[in-house]
Each structure stands twice: as structure tokens, then as C-alpha cells.
Amino acid sequence: MYVGALCGVLVNITERGSEKLAAARNRTAWLAGVSIFLLCAFFSYIFCLRPSWSRLNRLGVEKEHWLAVLSQFSGGETGTGIGTKVPTLAELPGLVESCRRAFLTAGVHVESLSVERFGETAASTPQKVDHLDYALLRLQWTGSWPAIEQALSGLERDQSLGIGVREVHLRQGGGEGLLQVYFRHT
Image (cartoon, rainbow, N blue to C red):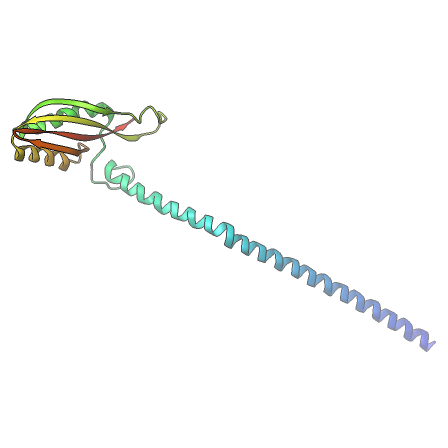
């Protein structure tokens, strides 16, 4: 009877031990599964998400830079600009007349004025997008070189006009130049 009871106790202890061992194995397997999942999540963050997140942050910084540049020309909406605005296409004839008038006030006679390039990028972009374009003006002058230089530098300094000098060829008693006039399509 003692042997039977002892065997029953040993079987009972063995069953409890195997249950505890199985429970310990289940806990170990669960912890191993969770740790493998966390390691996979960590490495996917390091190799996939972190470079994308860094690139997104760099794009945000670049966007802020270009908004600051744009605010210098808009003079209002996106920041405190310098108060200049890019002229529109409708203001282009007035800009051409401003060029002619600047030379006349400097004592230079404009013999001919022709537009070589005009609004070529407007057809390739959607209508709802504002974008910059430029026209090329070819001018021929009669006058002194210092007066031509004075008129050209005055046009470049006046930021409200959006005019840049592309090329100038001076000859005896005058010259010829190519001006780039920026305007905005709306």
C-alpha cells in the first residue's frame, strides 16, 4: 500500500513536473516569438522606414527653403518678402515699353526692337499652374557706350521689372543687346 501510494505520488509529481515544464516551454517559445518579432520590427525600421523618414524630413526642409525664396518675390502670402512681384503676361507690353523708355531717358535711341522668343513653355504646362517664363528682346541702339551701360545697369537694378541682360555687342556709335524679360503665366 505504501508502494502504491508512493508510485501514485511519483506519477502525480511527474505529471505536475511535465505540466510545469510544458508551461515553461510555452513561455519560452512565446518570449522567443515576441523577441523575434521585435527584432524584425527594429531592423525593418532601420533599413526601410528610417531612410524614408529622413528623406521626407529633407524634403520638408527643401520645401521651406523654396517657400522662403518664393516669399522674396511675392512680397506677401508666404512671408515677408522684399516687396517685388513677378510681372504677368498681360504686363509684358508695358515691360517692353519700360525698356525702350529707359534707353531714351539715358540718351540712347532705340533703332529696332524685336521679340525673339515668347512664352514657349505655356503650351506644355497645365492651365491652373502659375509658372515663370521669359521673352527675349533684341534691341539695336544708337548712342554712346556709357549711356547704353547706364541704361542696362538701371534695368537690371530695377527688380520690379524682372529684366536680365543676356548679351551685349557694342560697336562704334551704338550696339545691340539681348534682354531676358521674366513674366508669370496665370
